[in-house]
Amino acid sequence: MSVFTIQRVHETVSTIYQELFTIRFVHSGYETPQENFINKAVSIVPDKDTEIFFRNYKIDYRFYTNTLVCFIQCVLFNPPAQEPKVPFVTTPANMQLRFLVTASSDFAAKTFVVATGSINTYQFSNKINHTSGGLVLLTAPVENYSIAND
Image (cartoon, rainbow, N blue to C red; front, top):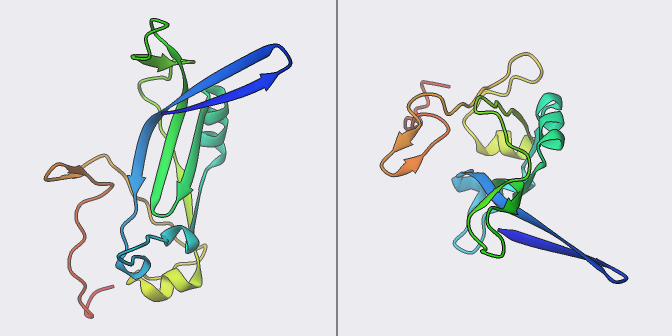
């Protein structure tokens, strides 16, 4: 949770944001024991419909190190109690969000994925087979690399 305070003369405005979800990207080519830096090789932005949805429902996002964090503007449900918080604008139950991931040539060189340019698009979803142990994954676990397969 983050609280931002904007002060004007004789006026204080506080905005509360609460984490909506996070997605962690794991890639051994972009990790050291001290740092994760996949954000230097890929760019993640919402598509146009998601961008409009974010604007309408007071949602924002940040991508840093190896984590995409989406957060939503909230209000206190029962002030002055700090918990629980509720969204400033109620989101629909069937919301769908799409992010466009653009990779650098360095990423393609360190990853066993066939670069398709603008011909094909890879889709990652959390609809099925998205859990392993206690972790929620975007897709099913990736099989071990074999030179015989792309």
